[in-house]
Length: 344
Image 1 (tube, rainbow, N blue to C red):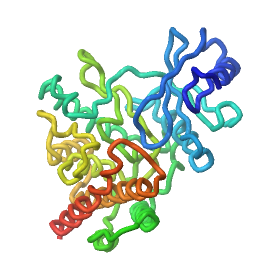
Image 2 (image 1 turned 30 degrees about the vertical axis):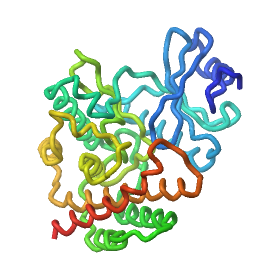
Image 3 (image 1 turned 45 degrees about the vertical axis):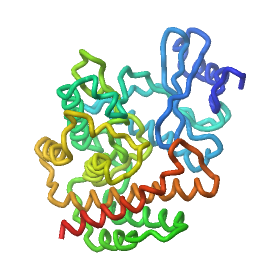
Image 4 (image 1 turned 180 degrees about the vertical axis):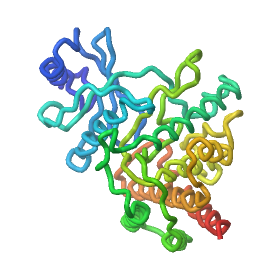
């Protein structure tokens, strides 16, 4: 590592690896910058002065638990390459920890804008904002239409019993980070467990599908999605979990958190009902049980925030707004229970 290397990315070592594995790709000295965002894995934009690439690796100090993520991320993006789902072209997977201290992969740099806030969308106008949101939904439909076997991803997950396993997993995470009374949390879990819907045809599931996890073409590019990013949570499972998470994120008023994306509040952005209607009409999938999925999405978000709150209070994590993460947990739980009560 040199003083010019960002944390976790030894540029000299990376340069030698690329020279050996992809001769002729790099034509000059490498520079790099860290890209903000993503759930945990580190993302860098690397350049030789003429071309840019993206490198992904696990977070520092957590190699073993997330080492498998690199192979999975690389695999799903590579498998989706020939499909209608826009993803970057993958160039290299390196599982040798001697290069960067952890497995990593390299993919092409894709031009596009990740819109996170309503303030970023407002200058585009309501019409463009609506077109971008519609493209976001249509891209999700395209993902869920991909045949996993034809993409070489038939064994990427276990669709049978997916919802039951997911609920059990998130309940275990909640129990592992519960340090205070959370009124309604057990009630929400029990409601969900007692009304598990029957999943439809399984699909590739992104796991965290939202506007700030995609890139959008610049003006004149047709407001199309140029790349879907952050495949850390992807698997095979019930596609309505992706749709429900989009709806849950749109219900921002229930989150009570100013560091959560508020892009869905921009003028022109379709309402949750409009998003669901477009998805249903384009996909042909039955969304009549979506309230359960949205309730589950709020449960997951509550667990995530409670985990952040727990680690923050223990001094194990830092981040902008993390001190307020705990404030959103109870409203999320309450909203989840209300949705499931309405469903009855």
